[in-house]
Image 1: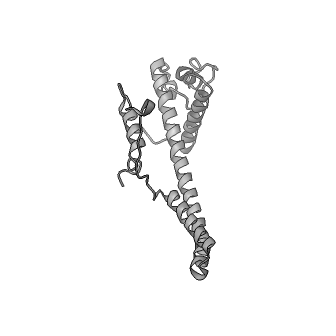
Image 2: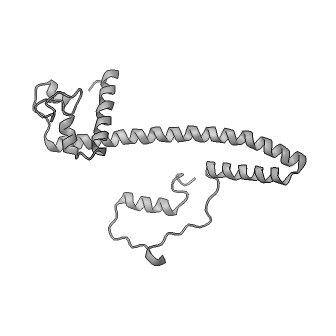
Image 3: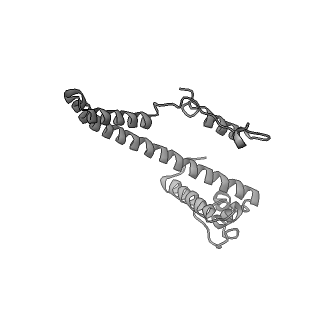
Length: 182
């Protein structure tokens, strides 16, 4: 299958954004699939949604996708859209973290010079506070001990858990889990 053109990628991105918005508004995946279907006979608005669900079939004059296929397509689109939003947010956070780190560098230089040159206790305290803030920002400080317990301090009871749920529990108790064991 040839790579989509820029216009097609934009239309697909718009379809994904519309799917997320409809789900956020409370529409179930099948309703979303029908609302954003390419085939006017299937589309709940009776229009051909540009590069909507089943557009490959509609372009070839073939029958529209069944309900199960629509649901899978909607869920796949929503997952992809949300993953892209998360990746974009993480990039934004990293850029902001770098900016804050640079600001702390500038502030630390002033406080450090005064602390070393004049031995002023307030300047020393300020330098230490900046160092503490930088350590939190960079994740240098680790808790000495983390303990998670169940109700009334008892053990946590786990009867049925998916791999994702177990991974989430491990991430809560293991400070190295988020950094890949570093």
